[in-house]
Image (cartoon, rainbow, N blue to C red):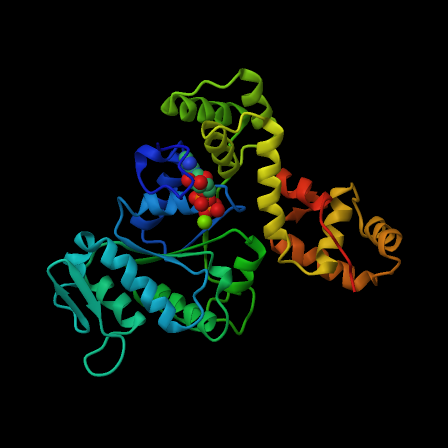
Length: 345
Ligand code: ADP
Ligand code: MG
């Protein structure tokens, strides 16, 4: 079981395609670019690319989801390094605040002879080898940690020539808001950023992915099922994996698998506010401008949302990478949005 494994991939053999993205990341790091952005919608395969990349290039992967305080960040660093200790031995042995004993490593983040996150970056930089720090789903960072991170990134940008920060996230506008490249008061103001966009697979690549996945599993679905999946899931690899996995596990009815996917998307959309949901529902039903949305919501709920409020909501939904120009970026989210229960207040 490999291609249809639902966890993010971390080995080259399990990662389908993405040579271009891995190559771009590789050259960005080897050229010493200080700041790289890897952007793409949810389930497009960012984490898989990043984890696989770090199999070849020294670096630390940090998932920012659930990281609230600095201690959480430190714990994530320690966890990643412990899990891949062999790779880090040469970078960290003899460093103050870090003790390596056999198969375990311990960081002292506080008190005497401790090391800070910034101190760790300085030590890694001194080894004279290129090193990547990956912050995945960075838009989850909240103040004061978000400000500390911007400062650390800016400091590394100016002073640590061997460190490349790779910043990734699914909510693309939110990632940009985190960086504040256009804000004169931000430490990252007007810095150069190398951007890499992770795109969906085209039809041919989607087909090849599914055939290869099914071959691995020794299952041969009818051509129609595969074509249906290609049509509906629009090259978003995470959904293709869900389709493949469910089919292999015995779900033979496409509409059942489709419902499963929509249910998953619904759970994610339910985190939105009622007004945001109402707007999405209007867009899912075909609205292509704000006045159509306003009328749709007025008809459904009997309330008139002011234009300024509506623009703000649309802006937010775009920043979350759910819609762009009144079009859904993920067809599963579109279907799910049609079914949203909304009661705007
Ligand atoms: P993202 O981080 O963009 O949300 P993930 O890397 O978590 O996406 O991938 C979503 C799903 O798709 C996971 O099940 C993962 O295993 C699978 N996947 C992503 N990219 C690939 C790939 N190139 N080859 C095989 N499976 C992939
Ligand atoms: Mg991810």
